[in-house]
Length: 475
Ligand code: ADP
Ligand code: MG
Image (cartoon, rainbow, N blue to C red):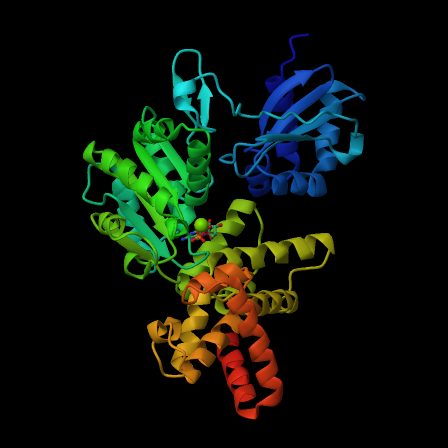
């Protein structure tokens, strides 16, 4: 017989290619990898769940016909979905059977062993190899430079990232700190740097990790009494990328250990890349000596993308997904969603999803409905910092005054209002609100919320405050 997964799949592709549009073929079939052939079941690997759903929705018939031609009536197709976040260390693959010929298949868990046999390097990201220890980079290959579109808003950060990728540890951008608001591409750019370095220098040890995970690992190491192993593990890395370092704020143990790791890496010419939602000057509860290290290299801001950049980001995304959409709709979305690229993409994805699930055409009306939902939801997504700023501006005081320990009535009220709005407009816990607004405890925040509720139903002037600030926060 001599049939292999590859030969069967090649024949299927030939048939499919003759029967669909070239662009669709390129988008939806070229990225597929034939993985194995067992009996009459061909396993193919697709890049994402979305991809699999799209194939099932649009191409299941042609897949079936072509496969039946190759393998007969009992032919089966098994999808292996390569999860988008291959950098998460759980369940990198799941298998799906097309609806047309569903049979039970066990999902294949490829778990990375947590308790590896190399005691001196106890870390969840270490996979014991045969000879030496390999460190999984935890990088997401979809977050590449190629996919990170350039605009005025990100030019500095992007070029600095590229420079670092060309000569890791060899530029004055060490550390490179990328900062900016939510959904503006910090995580994407951080991965892109790592992906590019891995591409150029495969022998370099690159590690991407969120500050939160780093903290968890550190705490774990203290509990298990192997803090030194933890430090040693991080000191052998060539390129360390830590995402969302604002998470270190207030965590002095983690800051301390990071400080030592940082110094070691820096002295040895290793590259450090950090991201944060704030500029170093605005970071609270981060030790001075660490902040001064952050400033050694370059801090580059990601700003809100302008209209042209938003349009090109959307077009690029649509192109990659193989979806066509009229320009006026793309422009409508780009015009109305301004401050967050993640939401921009989210709106487009819901638009595609809505239209494909309900078999509706993508019209400007549908776009309006969806954008409205997004814009409404974003209004509620304000930060506690922003709330404090709005409230203190409203009462013409500065944030330090608002947070101070004073018992002056108007200041106390302003502080209570800030707490009240933080509770109302964010998902933060009472304790976390308290710690961010002048280091108070959760009981104080709870009391503040009750007081504001009471006062706004009994005091007309106070009610006006609440209404005015609500309006300001909702713009
Ligand atoms: P952050 O970490 O700053 O919150 P992310 O890196 O998660 O933001 O970005 C949110 C989404 O926006 C991601 O899907 C990312 O790919 C996309 N994105 C952000 N900036 C760009 C850009 N310049 N070009 C293409 N996609 C972008
Ligand atoms: Mg991020």
